[in-house]
Length: 198
Image (cartoon, rainbow, N blue to C red; front, top):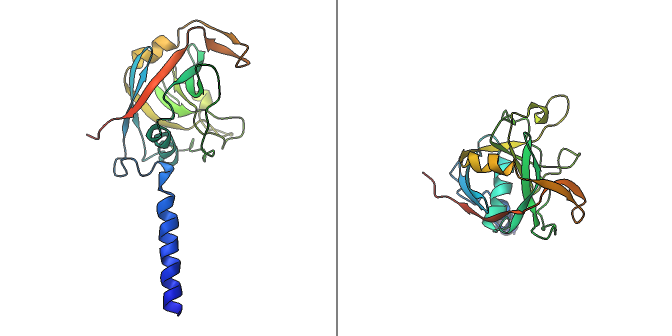
Protein backbone atom coordinates (compact mmCIF):
# COMPACT_ATOMS: atom_id res chain seq x y z
CA UNK A 1 0.00 0.00 0.00
CA UNK A 2 2.81 2.39 0.92
CA UNK A 3 4.59 1.56 -2.35
CA UNK A 4 1.41 2.33 -4.31
CA UNK A 5 1.01 5.68 -2.52
CA UNK A 6 4.66 6.58 -3.18
CA UNK A 7 4.24 5.72 -6.88
CA UNK A 8 1.10 7.86 -7.14
CA UNK A 9 2.86 10.73 -5.36
CA UNK A 10 5.81 10.51 -7.76
CA UNK A 11 3.53 10.47 -10.81
CA UNK A 12 1.62 13.48 -9.49
CA UNK A 13 4.88 15.36 -8.86
CA UNK A 14 6.20 14.57 -12.34
CA UNK A 15 2.88 15.70 -13.88
CA UNK A 16 2.96 18.96 -11.94
CA UNK A 17 6.58 19.54 -12.99
CA UNK A 18 5.82 18.81 -16.65
CA UNK A 19 2.81 21.14 -16.69
CA UNK A 20 5.02 23.98 -15.45
CA UNK A 21 7.34 23.79 -18.46
CA UNK A 22 5.64 26.67 -20.27
CA UNK A 23 7.87 29.12 -18.39
CA UNK A 24 10.17 29.54 -21.40
CA UNK A 25 12.72 26.97 -20.29
CA UNK A 26 11.23 24.62 -22.91
CA UNK A 27 12.36 26.94 -25.74
CA UNK A 28 15.73 25.73 -27.07
CA UNK A 29 16.47 24.30 -23.59
CA UNK A 30 20.09 23.38 -24.37
CA UNK A 31 20.97 26.75 -25.90
CA UNK A 32 22.57 29.18 -23.42
CA UNK A 33 22.63 31.99 -26.00
CA UNK A 34 19.40 31.90 -28.02
CA UNK A 35 18.90 34.58 -30.66
CA UNK A 36 15.69 36.33 -31.65
CA UNK A 37 14.90 38.59 -34.58
CA UNK A 38 12.67 41.56 -33.76
CA UNK A 39 11.03 42.66 -36.99
CA UNK A 40 9.89 46.28 -36.64
CA UNK A 41 8.38 48.96 -38.83
CA UNK A 42 11.82 50.61 -38.89
CA UNK A 43 13.92 47.52 -39.60
CA UNK A 44 15.14 44.28 -38.08
CA UNK A 45 17.07 43.80 -34.86
CA UNK A 46 18.81 40.56 -33.87
CA UNK A 47 19.39 40.08 -30.16
CA UNK A 48 21.52 37.42 -28.50
CA UNK A 49 20.12 36.50 -25.09
CA UNK A 50 22.32 35.38 -22.18
CA UNK A 51 20.57 32.49 -20.47
CA UNK A 52 23.72 31.59 -18.52
CA UNK A 53 23.78 34.91 -16.65
CA UNK A 54 20.04 35.71 -16.68
CA UNK A 55 18.11 32.41 -16.89
CA UNK A 56 14.86 33.62 -15.30
CA UNK A 57 14.73 36.76 -17.42
CA UNK A 58 15.62 35.03 -20.69
CA UNK A 59 13.10 32.23 -20.12
CA UNK A 60 10.44 34.83 -19.32
CA UNK A 61 11.22 36.76 -22.51
CA UNK A 62 11.20 33.55 -24.59
CA UNK A 63 7.77 32.52 -23.36
CA UNK A 64 6.35 35.79 -24.70
CA UNK A 65 8.17 35.10 -27.99
CA UNK A 66 6.86 31.52 -28.01
CA UNK A 67 3.28 32.76 -27.53
CA UNK A 68 3.81 35.44 -30.23
CA UNK A 69 2.78 37.94 -27.56
CA UNK A 70 5.11 40.72 -28.72
CA UNK A 71 3.65 40.73 -32.24
CA UNK A 72 1.69 43.91 -32.91
CA UNK A 73 3.07 45.81 -29.91
CA UNK A 74 4.88 49.15 -30.04
CA UNK A 75 7.92 50.96 -28.71
CA UNK A 76 5.99 53.48 -26.61
CA UNK A 77 8.83 55.27 -24.78
CA UNK A 78 11.75 56.83 -26.62
CA UNK A 79 14.33 58.96 -24.82
CA UNK A 80 17.31 60.05 -26.98
CA UNK A 81 20.64 59.15 -25.43
CA UNK A 82 18.91 56.91 -22.89
CA UNK A 83 16.44 54.14 -23.79
CA UNK A 84 13.95 52.80 -26.34
CA UNK A 85 11.23 50.86 -24.49
CA UNK A 86 8.40 48.66 -25.68
CA UNK A 87 6.62 45.33 -25.75
CA UNK A 88 3.67 46.18 -23.52
CA UNK A 89 1.07 48.09 -25.56
CA UNK A 90 -0.85 47.70 -28.79
CA UNK A 91 -0.86 50.43 -31.46
CA UNK A 92 -3.98 51.93 -29.84
CA UNK A 93 -2.26 51.98 -26.42
CA UNK A 94 -4.14 49.07 -24.92
CA UNK A 95 -2.04 47.20 -22.37
CA UNK A 96 -1.33 43.59 -23.30
CA UNK A 97 -1.91 40.71 -20.90
CA UNK A 98 1.13 39.55 -18.98
CA UNK A 99 2.54 36.63 -17.06
CA UNK A 100 3.36 37.08 -13.37
CA UNK A 101 6.27 39.35 -12.47
CA UNK A 102 9.74 37.80 -12.23
CA UNK A 103 12.68 37.99 -9.85
CA UNK A 104 15.09 40.83 -10.62
CA UNK A 105 18.40 39.44 -11.91
CA UNK A 106 20.16 42.82 -12.10
CA UNK A 107 23.06 41.47 -10.00
CA UNK A 108 24.11 39.03 -12.74
CA UNK A 109 27.21 41.01 -13.77
CA UNK A 110 25.77 42.32 -17.04
CA UNK A 111 25.77 46.12 -17.28
CA UNK A 112 23.32 48.56 -18.87
CA UNK A 113 25.76 49.42 -21.62
CA UNK A 114 25.14 50.72 -25.14
CA UNK A 115 23.01 48.34 -27.26
CA UNK A 116 22.13 45.92 -24.48
CA UNK A 117 18.56 44.76 -23.77
CA UNK A 118 17.11 44.96 -20.25
CA UNK A 119 13.81 44.53 -18.45
CA UNK A 120 11.61 47.50 -17.62
CA UNK A 121 9.90 47.49 -14.22
CA UNK A 122 8.02 49.61 -11.68
CA UNK A 123 9.68 51.08 -8.58
CA UNK A 124 9.43 47.75 -6.79
CA UNK A 125 12.49 45.79 -7.98
CA UNK A 126 10.64 42.53 -8.70
CA UNK A 127 7.87 43.84 -10.97
CA UNK A 128 9.27 43.13 -14.47
CA UNK A 129 6.99 41.08 -16.70
CA UNK A 130 6.85 41.83 -20.45
CA UNK A 131 8.21 45.33 -21.17
CA UNK A 132 11.86 45.61 -22.17
CA UNK A 133 14.18 48.36 -23.34
CA UNK A 134 17.31 48.88 -25.38
CA UNK A 135 20.03 51.03 -23.90
CA UNK A 136 21.11 53.67 -26.41
CA UNK A 137 23.92 54.87 -24.17
CA UNK A 138 26.08 53.52 -21.36
CA UNK A 139 23.50 53.86 -18.57
CA UNK A 140 25.44 53.00 -15.41
CA UNK A 141 22.71 54.71 -13.36
CA UNK A 142 20.50 51.68 -14.16
CA UNK A 143 23.01 49.18 -12.78
CA UNK A 144 22.65 47.83 -9.23
CA UNK A 145 24.45 49.56 -6.37
CA UNK A 146 22.85 50.39 -3.05
CA UNK A 147 19.52 49.82 -4.82
CA UNK A 148 18.34 47.12 -7.21
CA UNK A 149 19.13 47.84 -10.85
CA UNK A 150 17.50 46.91 -14.14
CA UNK A 151 18.26 43.38 -15.33
CA UNK A 152 20.25 43.16 -18.55
CA UNK A 153 19.72 39.86 -20.35
CA UNK A 154 21.32 40.20 -23.78
CA UNK A 155 22.77 42.41 -26.46
CA UNK A 156 22.09 43.54 -30.01
CA UNK A 157 24.24 41.65 -32.52
CA UNK A 158 22.60 43.06 -35.68
CA UNK A 159 20.52 46.19 -36.23
CA UNK A 160 22.01 48.56 -33.67
CA UNK A 161 21.62 51.28 -36.31
CA UNK A 162 17.86 50.58 -36.33
CA UNK A 163 17.65 51.14 -32.57
CA UNK A 164 19.78 54.28 -32.85
CA UNK A 165 17.36 55.60 -35.50
CA UNK A 166 14.42 54.78 -33.22
CA UNK A 167 16.00 56.83 -30.45
CA UNK A 168 15.92 59.92 -32.67
CA UNK A 169 12.25 59.90 -33.75
CA UNK A 170 9.94 62.75 -32.88
CA UNK A 171 7.99 62.22 -29.65
CA UNK A 172 5.10 63.88 -27.86
CA UNK A 173 2.99 63.65 -24.73
CA UNK A 174 0.27 61.03 -25.28
CA UNK A 175 -3.10 61.71 -23.68
CA UNK A 176 -4.19 58.09 -24.32
CA UNK A 177 -1.13 56.68 -22.56
CA UNK A 178 -0.87 59.61 -20.12
CA UNK A 179 2.89 59.67 -20.67
CA UNK A 180 5.60 61.75 -22.36
CA UNK A 181 8.23 60.53 -24.85
CA UNK A 182 5.76 58.65 -27.05
CA UNK A 183 6.67 58.48 -30.76
CA UNK A 184 4.42 60.63 -32.96
CA UNK A 185 4.56 57.92 -35.64
CA UNK A 186 4.15 54.51 -33.97
CA UNK A 187 7.13 52.16 -34.09
CA UNK A 188 5.56 48.73 -34.36
CA UNK A 189 6.99 45.35 -33.44
CA UNK A 190 5.53 43.37 -36.30
CA UNK A 191 6.94 40.02 -35.24
CA UNK A 192 9.53 38.48 -32.94
CA UNK A 193 10.89 35.16 -34.12
CA UNK A 194 13.29 32.68 -32.56
CA UNK A 195 16.29 32.00 -34.76
CA UNK A 196 17.69 28.47 -35.12
CA UNK A 197 20.72 27.71 -32.93
CA UNK A 198 24.18 27.86 -34.49
